[in-house]
Amino acid sequence: MKVSPELDNRFRESAAAEGLLDVAYDVVDSPVGELFVGVSDHGLCVISYESDPERHVEQLARRFGARVLRSPRPVDQVNRQLDEYFDGKRRRFDLDVDLRLTRDFGRAVLKELAEVPFGEVTTYGALAARAGKPRAARAVGTIMNRNPLPIVLPCHRVVGSNGSLVGYAGGLERKQLLLKLEGALLA
Amino acid sequence: MERVRIPPFERFYEEHREEVLRHLRRLLGAGAEDAFQETFLRALRAYPDLRDGRHLRAWVFTIATRIAIDESRRQRPRGDLPDLAAEDGLPPHAELGPLTDDLPPKERAAVVLRYGFDLPYDEIATALGSSEDAARQATSSGVRRLRERSKKT
Image (cartoon, rainbow over all chains, first blue to last red; front, side, top):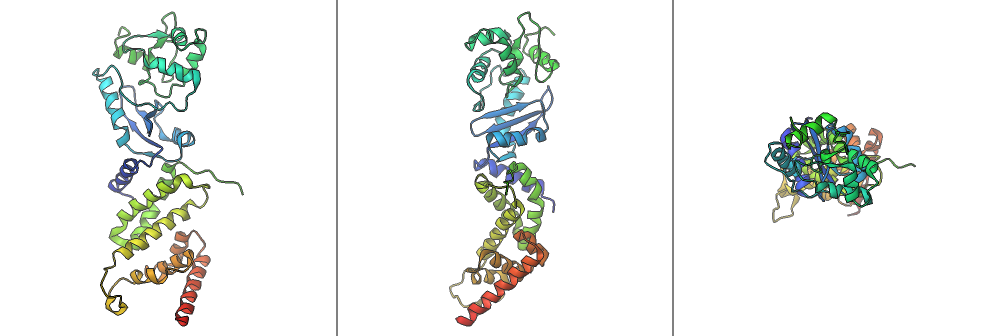
C-alpha cells in the first residue's frame, strides 16, 4: 500500500522535530550541481557533490549512528545560506559544524581553512604553516581532498604556490566556478 | 550466531513502510495513518537499543500490532457500568483486548488478530514474524488457555 507523500513527510518531520535522528539529510540544488547535505545534532556534518544518497547513507550510519533519515527541515538553514552565497549575498557562513570525526592535524587545518576569507586564496603550504606544520603541504592537500564540508569550509580557496588550481574533489571546473563567483579569479 | 548489522533507519523505513501501512489499515481502517506515524516514531526511539538486524520485519509488525490494539481499546467508550451486556455493538476487539491481557504476548496477539480483527492466518503469521502453522498454533493454544481459565472462575 502506497504511503502518501503527506503521510511520509509528516513522519520525516516529526522524526526530526522530536530530535530522534543521528543525521537528517536532503539533496539540494545549486549552481554547481545537486548537493547532498547532512546535519547531525551537533551541526552540519556532510556536504557532497556526490548527490546520490545511496553513496552516503551507510557510511553516515556507521559514523554517526543508525538513525539516518531524509528529512528536509533540519537542512533548511544550510540550504538557505548556500542560496545566499551563490546569489552573492553572503560572504561568510554562519552555521554550526560537526567535525567530531576529524582529528588532530586534520581538524586544526579545517579550522584554519574556515578563516580564509571570501574572495581570497591561500596555498597548501601557507595553510600547513598556519596549522602548525609548515612542511606538511602534501598532507594538507589530502585533507582538502577529504574535506567533509566543501563550499562552507572553503577548500576551493587553496591553490598551488605557483598559482595553479592543482585539484578539487568536486572537479577543477567547480573550483574555478566558485573562485570566479567570489571574484578571486578573472572570468 | 553472528549478528546482522542494523541497517540505516532510512533503509529500514523504506523497506517496511508500505506493508506496515497495509497491516494497520486492515486493523484500524481510517485510524491507520496516526498509528503509522506512531509505529515508526516508536521504532525510531527504540532503534539505538537494537542489537541485531535480524527479524526487523517481525519487530516493526509487533510494534504496529500493539499500537493498533491500544488504539482500538482507547476508542472504546468508557461507560460507568462495567456490564458487558451494556456494551453490545462495540467492535469485538475492544473486548478481546482486556480479556486476553494475561496471555503470553504471542498468543495474545494471535487471538486478538484472529478473533478481534478477523485476520487470516497468513497475515497473523506476518505480524508475528512466524510461519502460518505457528500462527495457527499460537491462536489455538491462546484460546485453550482462555477456556481453561473461564472454567476455573
